[in-house]
Length: 317
Image 1 (cartoon, rainbow, N blue to C red):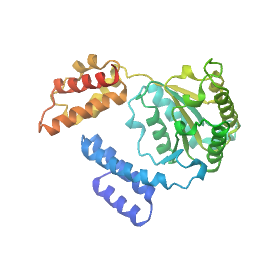
Image 2 (image 1 turned 60 degrees about the vertical axis):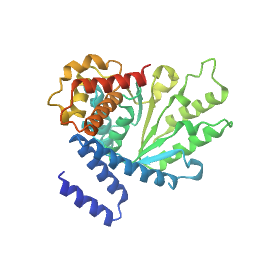
Image 3 (image 1 turned 30 degrees about the vertical axis):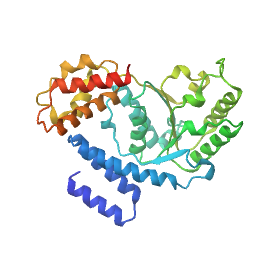
Image 4 (image 1 turned 180 degrees about the horizontal axis):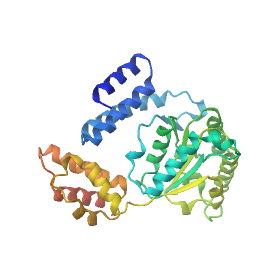
């Protein structure tokens, strides 16, 4: 979309009193600027939106019992925004396709994939996947804050879960259970407490009974921690991994496109073993910032390597 078209769309959404569409267009502009290499502009736009959302979340009209437990977002990211294997991308496409054509499946007594488990190391694209699915389906993304869901009072967490699943039934959307390990842990572990076993049993019952038109996505950094009974409740399990050589190269070229003239990307690859997709992106942003602040026109391999080394030191001591 041309810049003039973005401006016209922003003005129309403002005067039509469509705040969600206004936010979506603003995020599309941020994504467009990021692809052009204008990272600072993109980040400033996102920062303004995030600050506005913080205020919005505080006044969100969820039931009083759910206030502070759920965040609503209107994502503006597409499948092209994720650097991942063809297998992961094809599974995302399949989820979206089945949802869009769910009526066709139901005529044959089949259901679309609605309950998805995403597993893999932090920073490999799991949360981004949930945002992509929500955006592709033009649905709001509701993130359930699991750390605030779990309480020390007996029965309270299960009661909150029931209210969340009532909301899933009443309001169509993509519901993201982040840090799912908090309630999905193996029931047979010796250090498990009775209350958490009851919470997990409640979740298993709720997700099995759910017949809504919403999508449920659970995220874990380590599926080995999850109770085995969970897996048959999910329609699909997508496994994420640290980037391979092709993904590393794609990330570097994508993030450093504006400064790529003098860079030798293949020489950088051996130095970024162990970094996730998100960590590589952050290292690229660090290199871009230093280039801009030092008023350099050309970015060197040494500068990118320094940023990568700093990220390695920060995350992998």
